[in-house]
Length: 345
Image 1: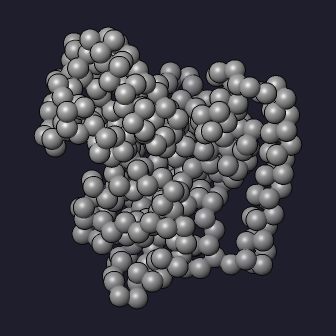
Image 2 (image 1 turned 30 degrees about the horizontal axis):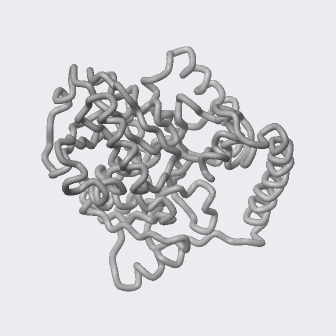
């Protein structure tokens, strides 16, 4: 169903009843806009109130649906906080449990609290535990919690989708909502031409001239085998591989693999947060056999879902590799200096 609506919105593939349904999506977008504005007005007029937490809050969010590189940025911030000696607590909605599991695995030093009632979860946590700082994942539209700094991530390859609100487009709020942010981080900035990047920066500055704009890129670190061993990125250079991913931006992942020198002979793309089935695994195995390939390269959040399904004889002779990436902010000094201003002590 997700794939159907994705193709309905983007028009990448023809879907049943597409021309008939799209006008109704436009009407639904107008209703969605009215709800967004009403909700914002209720908080601004204090009919609904935001509540502060016992520790500072750094919010990382976006204004589009998926694919902005928010999770790697959250990991980068959590690692920075840990290195500075702070006890950080991550508050997530828990909808994308695959991301939560990846963060929990990579950030063993951070307490991850999942659940839609993030305010209540934070309050309950603080009754018996210490938190120096909270990181609010996907928090830009979460007005219930007061934040000390708001970060918005924008994907350089698809910054604002088709510039239309859900469900006719991918925007969760009108573009001018960016003026509420303190920092905009343009992710995957190395994957677009300079002129395109300049256009995105200009678009953001048209909304808010004083906002801090940083560029970031996803830097591959190493490959992780299905047995948990690290392999250098050069391991797949000049090798024939199959890429498997379920992201909002599958093409960027495939491009990254190609940039590492691998030859992608087949790709299996699924919609973001896809839940793999036994049928999907059979499809992957068939693709490998058809193209005479024995190497699969996938993402961390896909592997946490695939791993339980490809153990044992079914994966015999297949080399499953997980690409580990980290996000690097180009203007890291000024970026982390801005974050330092809200830290306790």
